Image (cartoon, rainbow, N blue to C red; front, side):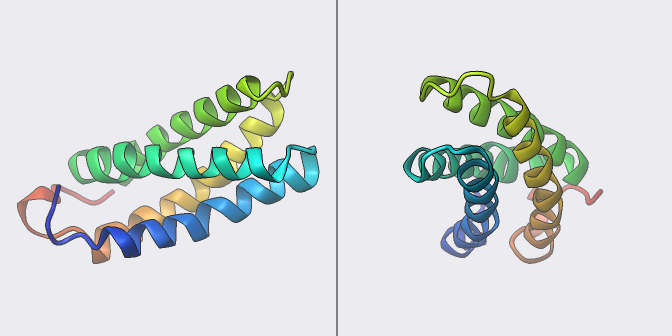
Length: 125
């Protein structure tokens, strides 16, 4: 991983971006417990940070990373809700993934602008 990345700052921003959307969509509008939505938000945040933001984004650019974040979000939320016993959770999983994907696009722009430098950052999209 790039030594120039401030992981603490990036993860804090990602938490501020991810958790409120997950809480509102899942807990407020869909009666998912706050504990379950928080756990899903944290797991999603960590997986998408390490896979999408640190591995895919610097190698392929924002478009590919944003698409991969959509897939990651949908699978983690849908799978997690099913594990927690929330049947027929595809609709809320899809809505959450779509909204988070839009937010992730802008997070990627911030990552590209402030966190990546040198030869590792291949291109912008």
